[in-house]
Length: 214
Image (tube, rainbow, N blue to C red):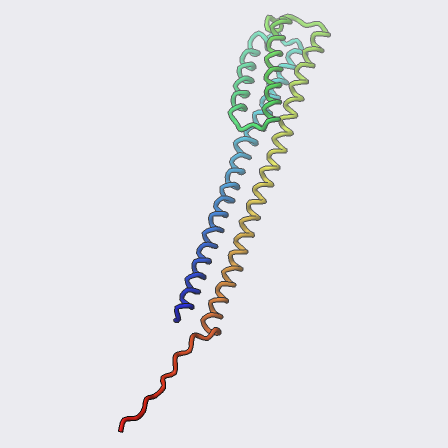
């Protein structure tokens, strides 16, 4: 094999190696992106959906007790429910929050604190029966909180879809790079075969015979 062919072989192998290295590193990054998206969908979306459902259920218990004038609930159970609500809020804040999500959650927490204070101010925790306008205002407070929970639920759905889309794009990118790698390697292989079997090597210098000795 001539020196020029050796150089061509070395360059071809280096290009093939660099191509495999580049696509490999790109696919690793895409795989990590898919893994991160899946983890976030579970940890920060599905788990939060469960927290939102629990918060909504706890608020509903408060609303039913207030409308039905359930004095036993507010004397014996309400404090436990409040504790559970704030525990759910702490768990919610431990997840990764978008800007809109954090703003809505802050508004919701302030609303919960206002609700707890209202329960004290109107005497619910002492077992006092409420007037109709007080019941109406109390229910309105809880309805606003439920609206914030609905907004948080919509954010979870939107962010979950966005993460799934990002995962799909990463998977498609991995597939595209793998296909491109295969095609380029085939082209390199064909070029190597052409260089070996088609391109002629350098011709050897013709030896001119000298004069015959007497």
